[in-house]
Length: 278
Image 1 (tube, one colour):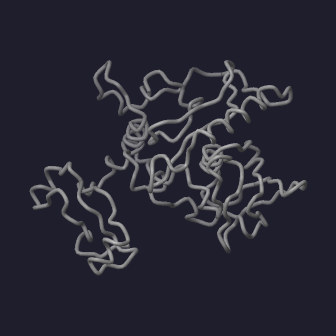
Image 2 (spheres, helix red, strand yellow; image 1 turned 60 degrees about the vertical axis):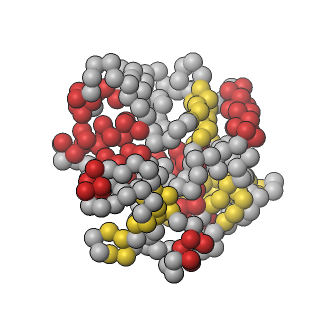
Image 3 (cartoon, rainbow, N blue to C red; image 1 turned 90 degrees about the vertical axis):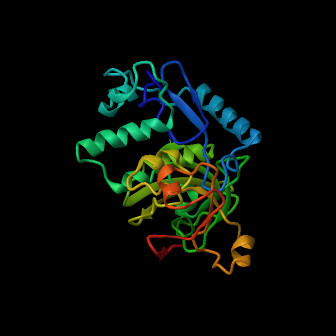
């Protein structure tokens, strides 16, 4: 990530892969990528990538598609974070380290907040499940959700969220990432031949989701020093555990603090500080 313009290549830096469709002048026509806590690839497909690419080409051909404004200041890069100065001069900076170095710099200034963790919310956070192969198509709407109250239905096509065009899961996540922590967002969609628009209310805490998969969390204090894969529902039942109870199997890398505490690979972690957690 050295030398990369963070304002142009603004994406979820915990991902293993992200695609941008952009013009030489910096106009971004779309994005492709994304994941959730369950899988690194369940939200993407070759068909979905092709669909997003075709949508980007359509936008590129449109004479009225807004171009990126000319830059008025030098690119913002990860090396500019004060915390980056501790790295060797030519050391590789991985994507997830953008979050690490940003957090460390903000913490040093006393400006970091816990809600900084809730980046790139899932569409499910507003009640939407998207078609993997056609990322602007609604595959599911959760009952009593903001999307349901707006009148969005299965099969509808999302057009824009806060004026950002939608063709992929990544487009939706980017728009949600830019939405306020509390307030409203404007969503436009197509139902049959009709176009609808609605302001979705965003309640406090709407951005929260399962972020246990994020590599950048490993540097957040206090560090738990344990990690691994969740037990399946069948494994929990066999142990007499509730389906939602915290239960995961310690992975092959056992940190030194965890080893000193007696934890070993394949141990099952059931709680923290004597507390049972869901």
